[in-house]
Amino acid sequence: MHLVLRRVDGGVLATPLTDAGTAGGEPIRLDEPGLPAFVAAHDAPGVRWVWDDTARWYPAVLAAGGRVGRCVDLRLCRRILRAALAARGSALAAAPADALDAPVAEVRVVRPTQAQLFDDALFTASVPDDDVDPVAEFREQLAAVAGSTAPGALRLLTTAESAGALVAAEMLHAGLPWRADVHERLLEETLGPRVPYGVRPRRLEEIAAVVRERLDDPTLNPDSPADVLRSLRRAGLMVTSTRKWELQEIEHPVIEPLLEYKRLARLLTANGWTWLDDWVRDGRFHPKYVVGGVVTGRWAADGGGAMQLPKGIRGAVVADPGWKLVVADAAQLEPRVLAAMAGDRAMAAAGDGRDLYDGVVASGAVETRQQAKVAMLGAMYGATQGEGGRLVPRLVRAFPRALDLVERAARAGERGEPVTTLLGRTSPVPEASWFEARNQAYTVEGTPAMQRAVESRARSWGRFTRNFVVQGTAAEWALAWMGSLRSRLTARFPGAVTDGPHLVFFVHDEIVVHAPEEHAEWVATQIREAAVDAGRLLFQEFPVTFPLSVAVAGAYSEAKD
DNA sequence: GACGAACGCCAC
DNA sequence: AAACGTGGCGTTCGTC
Image (cartoon, rainbow, N blue to C red; front, side):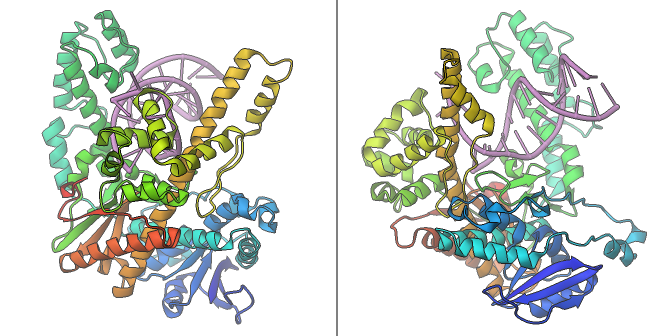
């Protein structure tokens, strides 16, 4: 049973459809303010809410203390299906672009004034009618999946993506527990007392003075890379940039204070007082997750830099009194995913019940764990030089099936062909100029320089497609992991999201659940079982394991990497 | 003054 | 940890 929601004539129309997409009853009209109550009355295990965009419908339900079990996010599913190689013959793929293909309308987070809080009309009047008919769109999507060459995989992918949309909305709603006082203490201890924006904090000023003195450059602006580079070269240092790794190679009294300056300046600009003012309210950091925001299907975050939360400030992420954070991350997720999707039993066995890189060493392919890691990352990223480049051939001998999979993905990309993840998310192809340049380079007008440039671009695109299949399938595993966990948590705690254990953070292969202390161990078990679910959902009985490190902690920083 | 490229660092 | 994938974001600096 589906309930399709659409905004029309200043209200909401809910159209019941059967699972096959045929009419399932009389459409129901309701007012926008009545939506949360309607959802609460009609949500049930067999019900799937169909809407154009989870971010446009679900927040109001959550704000009212409600939630839904399942949904279809038409915008996200449309994007997947229109691009999918497996559904390329569908009417959906051939349809002209419409409002659902446009970038998501800017969702402005406006803090209402006290007066506006009591003015219901302000909210109801501001919601425009929907341009797209969601019933027709949903039917086209059903047909695209059913008529595809991989209906099972696409059904799983679109279901997982939609579940991800619910998780993202719920995490935005709940927020990540954030102790501003802890954060402020860290800033004061590191930078000195708070200063207004634009003023250099005391500690930074002191280090800047040391840097200027040691370079004998009293007017140096340490925040200007160009200025610093000029000054370093004037001091006789042979550097080409002011990057950290390059400076680290150099012996000079200025290097240590300069690196310290850069470290503190980064803290100030990225996660200083301004960040705290902008992003933390009422003890919560509310990052907006963008489901499928990365071309591979990974999530992105919009604002606040949630996906790059520096390790150094995770001490400010503290569970509420009586609550705990359950922090879990999947160990060596991408190589395990690669082993499974390639059906490489030797590589899967290397990771069975242990650190996968240790297993690679045990296989005799390389000598040290560090080598195993460098070689594996090199294989997935397309390393050709350095240690990675040298070690990859050893993996080819030890794990030919897995390495063949990424190699074939790279070759396809170099030819300009799309590649797909396990569940069928399909990579984009290069833009027209890529093909034009390639064709031109091999005509009579082509020069060796043009050919070199074209081949370089081809290899670059091959590295992208090589990584796409692994990173994208790992993202699918993570979606399945979170989806299963969400089901498990809601089954036992069906009330408002924040009343029971709930997801508060996600970064590619890591999740954090905020849970009442007495349920934390139960949650840890659910997270582990959800990982098993995800492995089965994607790879059935293939003998691959997805071990997690799971910690129950008071603060995020207490969980070991 | 607005805008965007370049730079550099953070995360996975 | 160089190059070898995916991103976000803040600052500086040049151009219009």
